[in-house]
Image (cartoon, rainbow, N blue to C red; front, side, top):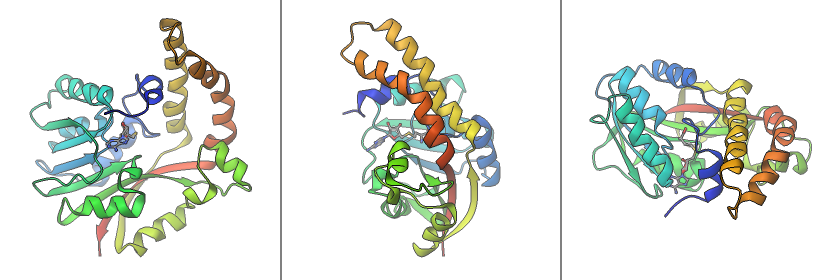
Length: 248
Ligand code: SAH
């Protein structure tokens, strides 16, 4: 079981697989006023940077589940590197339907809400693992400005314009699910650059190291087209943020 290989190639050198930076994760941890020994569940935990740094900085404990074998291995190594391997656990697997045995104080899904079939389904899934009074974290894109055409939305790699909302509407949608938005930390274009532009050097080095791989054509095409596509579309139109929710 694994995610499509293209992501394991283009994001192999990423510690954070979304437009957040280490500073944004630190800001989010501080904003949530995390307390020592708070249990955190992270669905789609990637290379584990959020759990590992929060374990180091705030003394939380936690479990991450991710379908990428590579990212899960990297998360385990990162936990050892930061000296928090006794506080955090990383499981390689499908997080769809995952409910923790012990209830958690923070249940998160950052940049992987397809795991629950969309934002609403993921909020419902995370709620099943949450203590009374706990916090749900959703990391999700939104339109910084509404694309004038479906072609622009597709240029942002959205399936359609309807895939995302404007920020005010996204915030209101959490209310419609019965949740208060109690905090938010938004990514910025610098963070987008760290996420997207970091793929380019990874792709270039991968091409040099793997000249006979069956993916060469695809990676070559992406490396050629991505910088312009990213600057024209994603960087201009797409925002991303982490939203902290508490049930009303
Ligand atoms: N939250 C992480 C990773 C976001 S990228 C971070 O902020 O860095 C999306 C992640 O979802 C990837 O790591 C991918 O491997 C994982 N993923 C995709 N489908 C999944 C599934 N069904 N179950 C668990 N993880 C999944």
